[in-house]
Image (cartoon, rainbow, N blue to C red; front, top):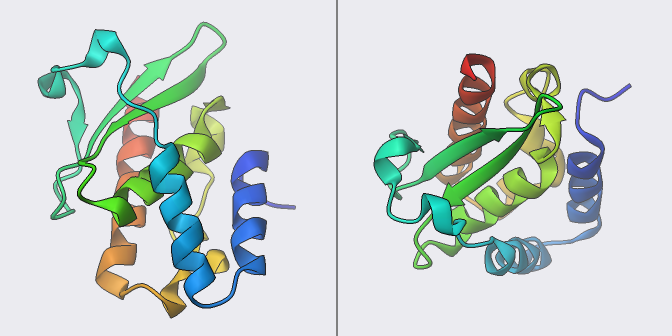
Length: 141
């Protein structure tokens, strides 16, 4: 039994079918799909959580819905496609989950994606840092 949300599990499975540089290409597809901030969050980085562990400025906002699920909003510069890809994966994989579901995900879940074969460990640590912030936001909401 997996501790991963269903959509995140699907994304991981899709990455497992990619080989070598295909993994980077797929990650960049996710980067292109990261939605812009909603109008009501535009210019409000001071109300968002910053992921200080990353060199790239990453801001996250957790929107708690009436059914206790979360929608995550990310602000990541377009000049950082790898990090935008991570953020897009996290948004797509975690939107609609509860705090309990989010906190149950292991920090190294991304190893099943095989990205460590094509991306440096330092860059991969960004995924864990983003997830840690998402978990904190969910628990403190």
